[in-house]
Length: 127
Image 1: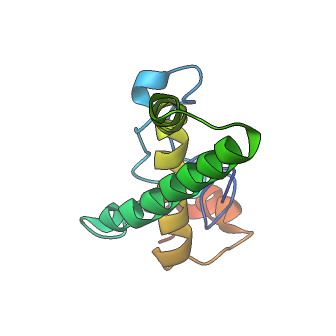
Image 2 (image 1 turned 30 degrees about the vertical axis):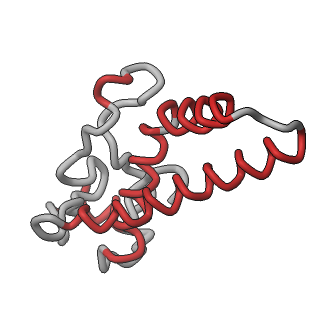
């Protein structure tokens, strides 16, 4: 899941572009797995639930920074706000992608099939 690969074949990329080389298109997902043909959009609005995962990731970042700040030094309010907002803004692409991957892997009802890529190459889309 952390590799952002298809949950069925674990070979195809979920996202079209690498966000480090093309940051403006960090949110572009394939409709289907480019290797096995699995549908990455199981139902309309499926990824609205990934907002809960994104919220959890942001809370984890916030708590980590708060604890580290108070352990390392006594921050002023402005320093604290900046030290929280900057990492949260810089991690938006990572947060977005991990939230969607987690949602698809946990709730997409897609089982791992190690032979999915071979089936696709041999005879069409297996869904």
